[in-house]
Length: 130
Image 1 (cartoon, rainbow, N blue to C red):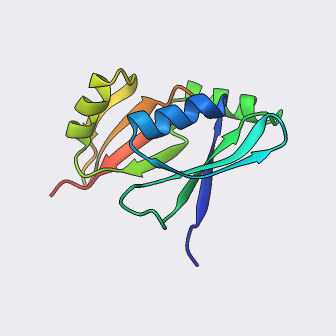
Image 2 (image 1 turned 90 degrees about the vertical axis):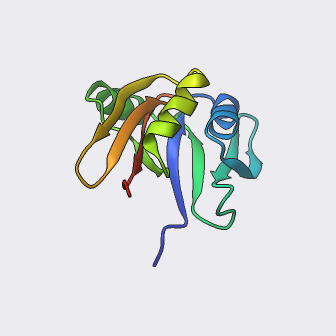
């Protein structure tokens, strides 16, 4: 068994696609219209085009807003992405205007940082120092 797809709820799919591709560097894999307002919209790592897909899922379900607002309020990231160097990625993303809620922190076996994805979620980046 392996993870094929996971999702993040987003307020605006077009805005999310721009952020996740233009800022974070993912590439669009699927963009299939689902009715007039929504799309089956996934992105993948450019290093693993056949790897795990991230679904940029519309946040329309009534349970989404209370769930997201509580975890954001508590500072809990919705997802975690692996990077080679958290400090370098932190500087790169800050240079692109990304707002971090947690600067890089050495947590023993890993280094982490947390940013706002502009779509209603906190995302953590993490790396194992060499």
